[in-house]
Image (cartoon, rainbow, N blue to C red; front, side, top):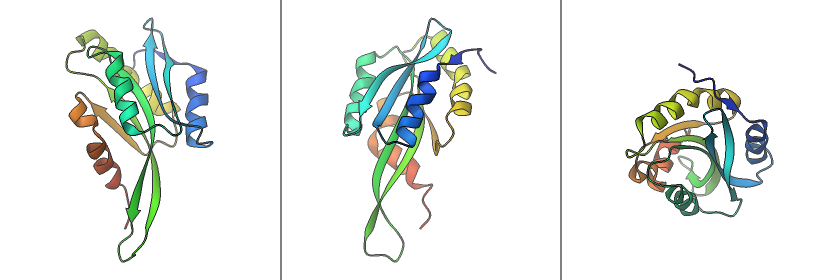
Length: 148
């Protein structure tokens, strides 16, 4: 099911700035006036994952959002003594439990539009609580994609 919500062109541009140019660490998107997905918050390249979670908290416990995050972590290949830096893009649908049903439905039904526009995302994540969006949970989901 699609909602007819459009993805603003600047959302596509900032996604490419993260994916190709590595200019930002994350971006949080919001649906404005039930018509278009727009940029709400841009995280600096040197931002930490906790900064991202804090920005989600500031939005409020009843507000849904989307986010793209360029997540970096150390990976040790099987049989190797050294580690290498891995970076993976994930797209998150943030729908807190306290959000209104209409808001949850609108964001859920529009998630496919972002998936279609954002080529290069390695993982799609849905979270309803901060426990599901914590650093450890996200990293665990991204590490599943690693080949040893």
